[in-house]
Image 1 (cartoon, rainbow, N blue to C red):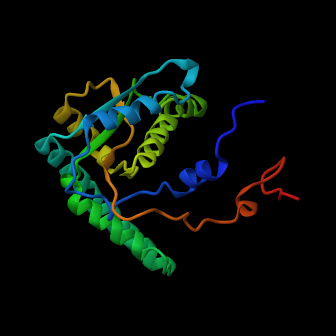
Image 2 (tube, rainbow, N blue to C red):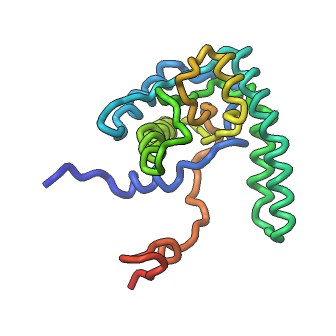
Length: 219
């Protein structure tokens, strides 16, 4: 019989790890050693062929953080304008809080204690088949989620962002990242304020899970 985990605690971690924006504590330093500890956990994630081509860049220099935040905001403005138009055209009424928190993150991003930029050695190419593209990103993205879970377990808030990748070359120049390396995300890292997070509202699993064929419902 294998080792049993506390399922209640494990499920609580998995269902309450949220994208933290407004509740990032911008005033409290996060030790580099703690971020490294989270990365150490993350590097136990699966990777294709067990070839660990991920690299992790911790950014806590104020000038560099400001540069990344500027690139993020350059991409953010047109992106959110399109999102607001989409929300208005569909008549959604549940997106206000998300957009408000996203606005907040964009405004204060340069103030977060640290940013972590996970990278993958190599570049996807236009000639890659779908399986190859999936394998390329599938060999690093699970580790990023493991990093975020490890951070949450230690009282740290994170948020998965990709907007700065609209200016990936400029970010690479700023940080000295070679052109043969792919940045795959950027997550701010800070202690979070408040006591805890709650599970989010999601579609019932019966509506998003099929059995033995597309749109074949669970019994």
